[in-house]
Amino acid sequence: MLTGQFGNASSIHHFGQTAKQKLESARRDLAALLQCHPTEIVWTSGGTESNNLAIFGIVGEGQHVVTTAIEHPAVLEPCSRLDVTVVPVGASCIVDPDDVRKAIRPGKTALVSVMHVNNETGVIQPLDEIAKVAHAAGALLHVDGVQAVGKIAVDATVADLYSVSGHKLYAPKGIGALYVRKGVKLQPRTFGGHQERDRRPGTENVAGAVALGRAARMIFDQGLPSPELRDRLERGVLERVPFASVNCAGSPRVPNTSNIRFEGIEGEPMVIALDLKGFAVSSGAACSSGAVEPSHVLTAMGLSKEDARSCLRISLGRSNTEAQVDALIEATAQAAHHLHRLAPVHV
Image (cartoon, rainbow, N blue to C red; front, side):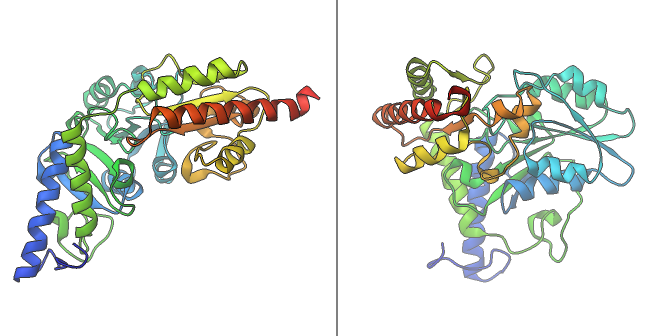
């Protein structure tokens, strides 16, 4: 697409129409994975833009939005600029639909925004129940589905708007999409063209969209991942490290994400120790690694700042093997025991 078919998809000449065909084929592939109609797919630059477009495209002046304390900053930051109510969560990291109902202001709440899967704990939210609550009150439901697509079955039509990020399902960085249910009036946030049915103007990233469509087709054809490797990882770490525990182990979770707390030691030295052994993990959200403050998700769940700083998030991919997981277990156990001996509380 970058060298052989680089036409502008909005042009009527042969090269442009060839690009247009590829763009629409990719739209159909992603729509099939999301179980929606292709015309309901809007191409964006990624999950952050999709979230911003969904929130600011629906919530107008004088209107109210409801979101939750465990959302990604790409939702929390836009909502903070509006009249917002933030719903708390407990230790399970599960949003209670009744708390959402209590937060809604009848006649004023335009949008409820709840993530499908938490990016740090992997916990799956009860979207069906939350959708019923939002719709019963006359509000629309936006779902940040960035961490869900490709990991679990997704029916975007449970929501009115659903955000997708390409690089979370093996497409390149810089491409994403927003599902917008037919009939939903979405106000554009940028102006200057009529692309994407006037919902997101600007020349489309055809190469990125084609790659996202191919990734969606791959997942559709190959099926969803199994939790076997995640479970193997957690069992191995818990067996080797007695002061470790899995956050939200009893909650419904995606099969690839684990959040493990190592009592008495800091997560950042663990990240560095594992990096030196060739393993890439994080002590919080990947886009906020290096931050001094502890994870807002973990503190919202009731963990102290110290405990929140003692957690690692580990994500597994389709290419990972049992041998790699076993090597990670060994490296994690060695690093954890070494740092535990050095921790001030044990001096």
